[in-house]
Image (cartoon, rainbow, N blue to C red; front, side, top):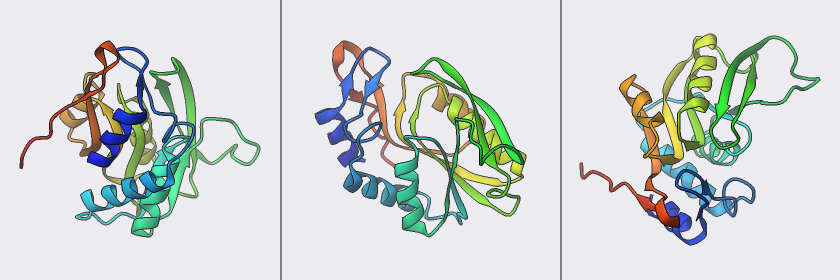
Length: 194
């Protein structure tokens, strides 16, 4: 998605060879017009699927997921990382390790919001080692729901999460695949001509 790539080049910062900072439009401050276009792009890429729920993880996956949900008319469910007085039992749970934060979190979704009748699309901001996606796939499996695929805003192609998930047969649509962050410069994987 060229609009996203242009935004990454203009505003993203390669903090190291593995960390890309995009907090001006995705991870802290949100560019709603870009998110609207991202939601539309995911809807287009998955137009061959019937989707009943959008599943993500708090917090940076919520904005692109909401725009996709708006585009396709489906509710958005987000896995919570923090304990809550209102979310304490009747839960699907899994563990997710964050590459960027180097912490493992318990994530939870109420059983009231996912079930075996659902066709789910998973949306997340980044795909690095694939831990968040694996946790969300686990929650979907616990619910007996069918996962139609995974939409990723930015994939770190130099890490193996995307490769491993694709080898397991998971459909992944990434809007921008970063090839390298070496020497503070963002380069993208060139898309194959179909």
